[in-house]
Image 1 (tube, rainbow, N blue to C red):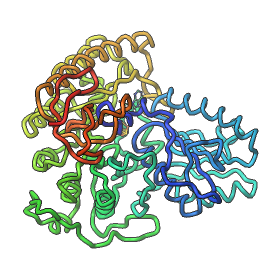
Image 2 (cartoon, helix red, strand yellow):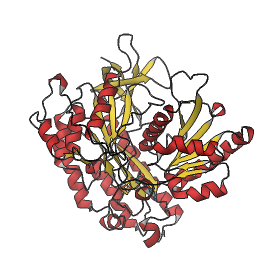
Image 3 (cartoon, rainbow, N blue to C red):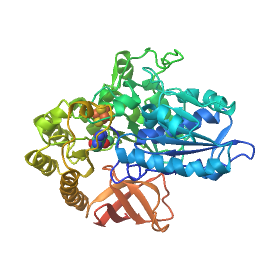
Image 4 (cartoon, helix red, strand yellow):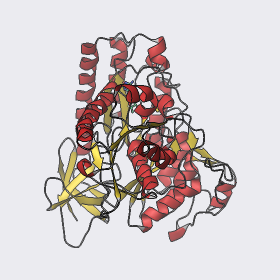
Length: 502
Ligand code: 5AD
Ligand code: SF4
């Protein structure tokens, strides 16, 4: 599942409720769309697809919902508190609708699928409910609402990947961007609602992914993050049907500019003659340019292969950072979670990462207090953390989600205060590990991609090293955002590296 980038504002909790704003000037006569995204990076990427689809019918985005003709809220169902936040926000939009009865309010994304009838019947302010696979239908659905009807499309698809749609980059720094490579999930982790809200897994046409990366690079972007619930299960066959309109992937092969040599012996044509797996795809995107950094999320411990690790090691521009959610350090709990790996298997994957990519940053997701978890089993999660010494972790208490395997088969029997105490122990340990990991950079020089000026002072730049750690350093005139700089790290806080360009 996707939850990304070390200490990143894109993190699921940190970015909740952030409005996406298009920087382009708004035409006076254009209809205005305000879109607010919750949850994972995939939702943020989806909002960019929505903006692109609606731009075809004359909509431009606005950052001010008081100006909007249409307000969309792109929702998340992963934990109960994500849903609660969305409901509170909807009631605020209700006040706006009373002021402007022509305003259209829509619910998109994961909650749409889960709660369609509830939204339309109980929360009368919602006019349109659209699931994650039905965004192409949005222009029709808006017309339907304008002719006085409520509109719903929450059909999930086995094919939709929006491969042919080039997203309108919203709220963009013009330097880093997300590219979706798969949609949906087939894994059925017992705690997780995603397979129900986002449907079956499907992989997007590899050519369209490479073309999007190349277009971004040509537009000045210098980092792409490939997104999927489980990127390691990416698989695409050239010539396979790629979208609901029945178009086939074109047979054009990606360029191999800049003299980079491929581990397939430069034979991408050969790689493309058969099935493209995630390692092949990573390589194809890395070959767009050595100046384009490639990140990806999320890796699944059961599927991440040595081939992927060797590809990361081979290319300097594929970041040495892997988000590998463990969820629990205990084999019995992992089995109840239906994660399909054991503690030993996970440790084996960590050892492989350490051997093949020395110094690779690793982050994780952990759930505290899953059904029936004992104190000893919780200790095994803590000991796993000691073993791996994660650079970063996203930690949660277990939240039962209706319709999941766990909700149907297991009792949510760990008292809330026990869950919270276990979470606090996990957080405290992680804080110590994060600090220790950052301290390892002090006294070293890190190649940083400058993303812009720091939030606290426009005299400072901020940017990430390869590991994803954020660095802050004094701005200098001859180096600009979007360029790389070598930064000598002088000190760190528990979340940030501090240094100067050398
Ligand atoms: N309760 C708590 N955490 C959950 N996650 C997913 N579902 C739940 C749930 N029901 C966490 C997992 C996943 C991350 C994105 O969210 O750790 O990897
Ligand atoms: Fe991730 Fe498992 Fe949920 Fe799929 S089912 S999105 S692998 S947590």
